[in-house]
Amino acid sequence: MNVIEKIKNQIKNNSILLYMKGSIHYPSCGFSSQASKIILAHTKKCKYVDVIKYPEIRRELPKFANWPTFPQLWVSGKLVGGCSIIINMSKTGELKQILKNI
Image 1: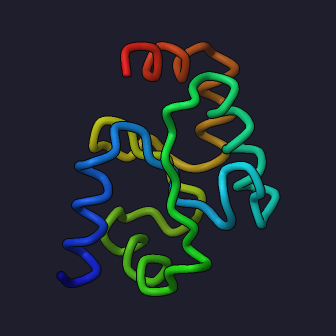
Image 2: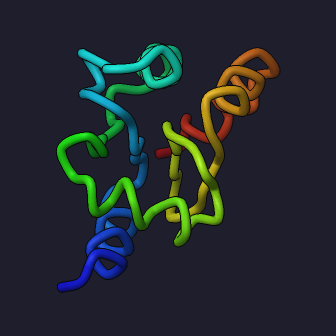
């Protein structure tokens, strides 16, 4: 399986997926830390992929997603966005709405 197929499978098989630096409980960067805290405040169902451990995903996902930075939140197979979008969606209540039925 090539890297893009692996990414597609991860997105398909996880209804809430955060590509991030570090783990969801021990993030390795400030943006990943902010994003994971917000997501965990809304749901415990989030899976994650540590892009530091998987440099091939770190290299290929930005091209696949057309999103250059990490973290990246994917919900129900669609890219939601990065840290600033997660923060804004949390403030407006939109993130809660998206995550509540998953």
